[in-house]
Length: 131
Image (cartoon, rainbow, N blue to C red; front, side):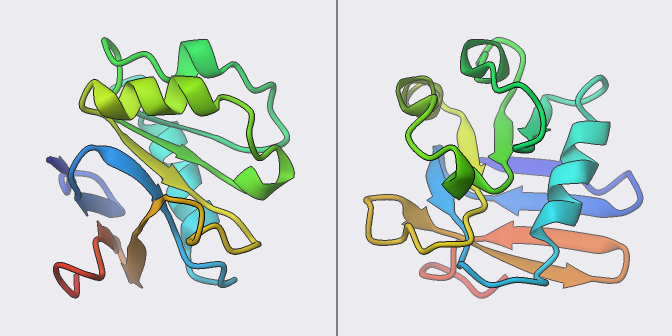
């Protein structure tokens, strides 16, 4: 599935299959910035995001009739919450992106990475391609 938001500034391009993905536990990669960009586009595109300072309402957030992609910022701070909704969303064809400061790559989540250049955010599968 491709989520192509390249008509906006910054442009966002996500080429991943429906699944739950986790970014590497690195800092200063642009993940929080990506989260804010997705959140700002939520009223005009089929994307959204959640950050730990907001109330977490997984049933509303992971609504496949409204969204194709959802990102959770700092999911390590509320790990485990909304897991059933995330799985249902991914099984119905949605993409979930998780930002965690502790490594979750060994917890059956697929890896993804973010390439952040000026004006462009690209999320990709590091196993199948290099962004």
